[in-house]
Each structure stands twice: as structure tokens, then as C-alpha cells.
Length: 170
Image 1 (cartoon, rainbow, N blue to C red):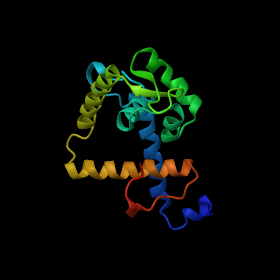
Image 2 (image 1 turned 90 degrees about the horizontal axis):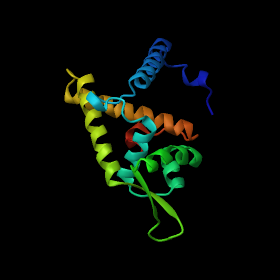
Image 3 (image 1 turned 30 degrees about the vertical axis):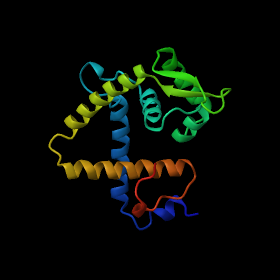
Image 4 (image 1 turned 90 degrees about the vertical axis):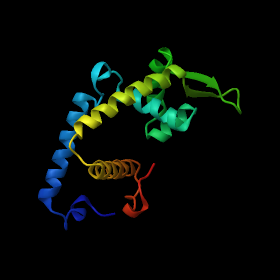
């Protein structure tokens, strides 16, 4: 396996320095604003809750282990993060349709409504932040950011980098 030094031999160190700096600035700004949205809903849902609710909305009811695996985190973390969502009625625990002994987590109607409010607010923020960008620039940025996040996820999972021609990983 190549070392970090081997991987940067043919690359512009100044460009890599600028890239890592901009990623660090992005991470700090994202955490400061939580990329929460605009208006009253600004910063109204933490990142973990948003990602959990979004995953349940996109993929449907699932158990803690499946949710954890899909998010690349451990089950105890999901259990801890889901508890307040259940307590506030955004997520409900239900019996597994095929195995009544197993429990699945499901987005509640209240959770879906809340998620849509937050999505709307975050869309408005993205529109403001990218005001003056063309549709093509927004699409390119989204494609590259998706590719970057996929590469980080693969690296964390110990997988080889994805083929850029293969499209984004899910």
C-alpha cells in the first residue's frame, strides 16, 4: 500500500496545502453555522438528528444495526442519538413486520413534517450561499463534494478509493 508520501509525489504541494486549508475552513464554518438554514429554523436541528431523520425518510423503517451500518457509525452511537428523537415523537419504535420480536425505527408523521421544515430552511441557505452561481457551478460543486465525501467514507472504512468514472457511492 502506498504511503502518504508516495501519493503526493506527483501532486502540487501548494495546491494540496490550499485544499486541506479550505477543507478545514469549511469544516469550521459548517460547525459554526451548523449549515442549519435561515429564519426561525436556523440551527434548529443538530447534524446527527438531521442525518438520522433523513436516512429513515430515504430508506424507510430499519433496525438500529442497519441504521448504524448505513451511516458508518456504531450501534451504541445510533441508540444514543435516536433516544431524544423518540422522546420528542420524531421517530417511533415499531415491531418488525416479519419478526414481531425485533424493533425497527420509523420516521413519524411529526418527524417527516419537521424534517421538511428543516430541509426548506436549508435549501434557502444553500440558495443564499450560492447566489450568483450558475446551475452548472452548483451541480459541479455538488458532484465534487459528493465524490470527496465518498472518498472520505471509503478511506474511513478501509476501502480503496472509488473509480471516479463509476459515479458517486451511496
